[in-house]
Image (cartoon, rainbow, N blue to C red):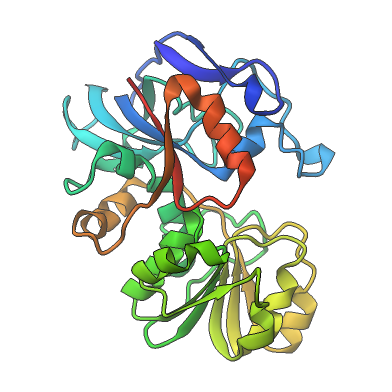
Length: 334
């Protein structure tokens, strides 16, 4: 079969299109003939060797490396011990995350095998391209805002992450136009919140269409200068500068960080009675099945920034490096 792979860490040019062996189907697994796959931040972080992490945390690499966790396609084979799926079923999945985040997900290929427990039937109302754009980003927003769906130890903090009730609350979403952000806006709205979206001005109409009640163009106005007393900040960007959102929160509010590394304001938040929390998304087919009706009826939309053939995966990585992504970048598989 064909796959987009790399033989070393580096820029988009290290991703090449080559022949690789077909994956085996082990007990408890299904084999998917991939029709579409999406690109997520862990893909481009791993592609260049996670250079943003401290050296002791960086993966060593097991090459050739095939990136990709999010896929949508048709079931090609089913292990003898698997029930609930049949050959020919249209499914979508997030493959082996986080356990496979250092190269064992292998979704950017014509075929991928994975535990059946990580897949769900594809929502009938959307095509494979849009279904492939959903799993990691939508599950991230869902597991931050609604329900964890797993009881694994939290790698970022000693206590479990706990979502907070959203109905009637005001939620600020930073990075609202990106993969996780555009789903966070919609999930918060579905759950009855008033949503303030923070993104660049070119995304204003798009975010209004997704249900944002207010859109702040961060290139013109600093949200922390004009927003006060929100119940929850869902920061899909995070990082060392995230602390600026502290003064937007009311006492007793919550601050959720998708990227907590480098965050240095936890002590100040604690003084103000603000809960700071993070979590790491986990593959769970049952949750994908649970959100499928919302994708099917359009309550939650998958927005596609751009799409590229699998053979041009390096161009998809180039697009990712340009930033200011609106929704998801998707690879189509011939």
